[in-house]
Length: 321
Ligand code: CP
Image (cartoon, rainbow, N blue to C red; front, side, top):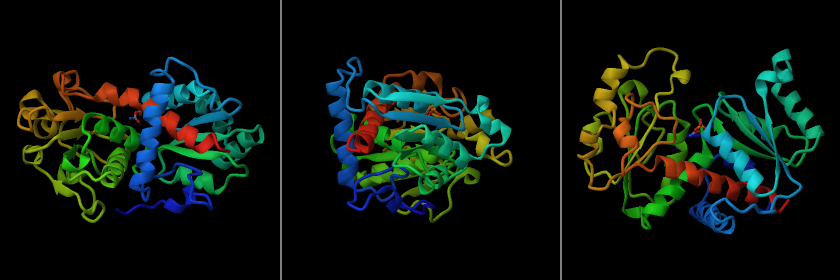
C-alpha cells in the first residue's frame, strides 16, 4: 500500500515502538501483542473501573487541531486510568491563534516536560513532522492525520473483529463509503491485512474511490449490492465533506439509495454479518438508524474497545521509558 509516512521513524534502534505514527509496516506479531495487551489491561483494570499506576508520574498532552469525540476522550480516559496526568490542550484559546507555529507550540510544551503528544491534524504527515523535530524523548501518537492514517482506530477495529471472530483468515470484509478521504480505511486495511483477513473489498462511488494502485490486494467495487454479497463484516464510513474540494455526490438522498446500509441491504449479506463504523455516524446518509442500533451493529463495542487499545499503546510507549 502506498504511504507517505516512514514506518521506520517510529522504531528505536532496538526495533521497539518509540512512536505510533502508522500501522504500515507493523508485523502481525507486533499488532497481536498490542491487541493482547489491550485485553490484559481490560482485565487488570476490571473493565476500566480500577485505576492502574503503570504511568504514574507521566504527562500526556492531547493536541487536537481537528474536532473529536471518541479519540480524544478515550485517549484522555486511557491515560488517566493508567495513572498519567493529561493535558487537553485547547487550540482555540491557545497562542496558536496569535500566530505561534506548530513547532514553537510543541517545543514550548516540551520545555514544561511531557512524555507524550497525542496529535490529530487535518494535514497528512503532521504527527511524523512533530516526531522528526522533537527536542525531548516524548512519544508521538497519531490520533488521525488528514486522509493518511488513524492507527489506533485500525487497532481497535481489529480488536473488535478479533473479539467476534477467532479466525480472521476466514473473513470477507467490505469497507464502504468515502474511501478516498478516509484515514480509517487506510489503517483498517493495514491492520486487517497484517492479521490475515482473507478478502477485503473497498466500495465507493467512482468520485470517492481511491487510486487504483493505492490498495494492492483489495478489490475496488462501485456497486454496493455486489460488494456485500457474501460479506461477513461491513465497515461503513462517513462522507468526509471537510476533505472534499467540490461536491462529490449528487445528493445525500441519492447517496443513501446507492451506498447507504439499510436493513433490506444488510439482509443481502451473510446471515449475522457484523456492521462496524468508526463514528461519528450520519444517520440516513451512510447508515440507517435501525442498522446502527440493531443487533448486528458493533459501533459502541468499537468505542469501548478504543479505551483499552489506547491504554495498551500508551503503556507500550511510555511505561518502559
Ligand atoms: N472515530 C473517530 O476518530 O471519532 P472522533 O472523530 O470522534 O474521534
